[in-house]
Image 1 (tube, rainbow, N blue to C red):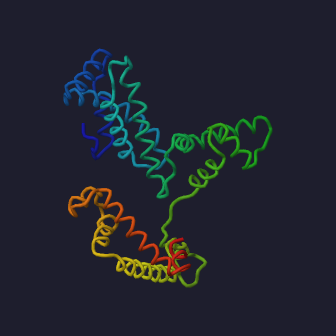
Image 2: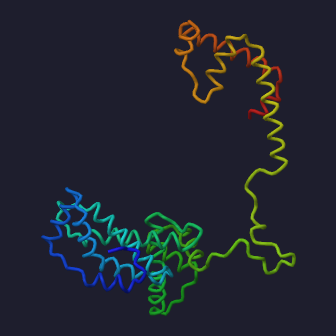
Image 3: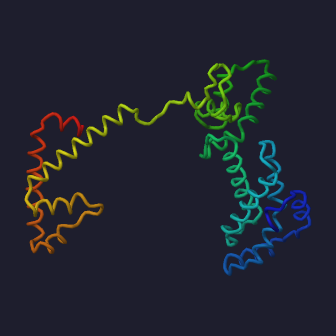
Length: 292
């Protein structure tokens, strides 16, 4: 049964008409798929439990996602469950599949709830899907005791109940109470028609910083070029091959090309670096400031 059918009513009708598998048949189909990759067995297993996926998807309609999309995500979770199910463990497939279906639907809901990522850890996911329910229950219990909870007390109680930090409750409350809006929307109080995006600080370097960076890098390149000019041809070659290539050559390969021992190449390299260091030190504090 295709998961992208145009009408979820047709999908539901088809799912309700699917066969009910007994434990023995279910296990046989699971073995056929796991051991032989029998696609007919997989299709039969998926079709039989699509009604379970649709039933679970319907419970998440209150989050505003299209039912067709929820059913598709539930179906994907069902297929993941079928692919990972191990019939040797003696667990019914429906019991195992519930967790995969639920995880797939919840991930989809959270991905599409807001352009800003709502959270992906298990505790954040639990908070997202249980916060309103826990809050309503705590308020009812407080009312029954004749108490009135302020916002801070209520947040602390929710954090304790769900097992998450207080800051996570405060963050999630803001996410759930608000909605996304376009950064290109005009600020209502702005007479010049500026958009909200104009108020966001640019985290990149400022123009004066870019100019300063270019100047400093140019100075360093010139000083390094001067330092390289103090080396003889063989020293320049070794330094270039060891430090200026994307993939530095080994001492051994350079020794073979120059007909030198590996140790001798290392000595020449060390001497070359020492010459360059002395030249750079002649610029004193300027070099130290740029390299800091």
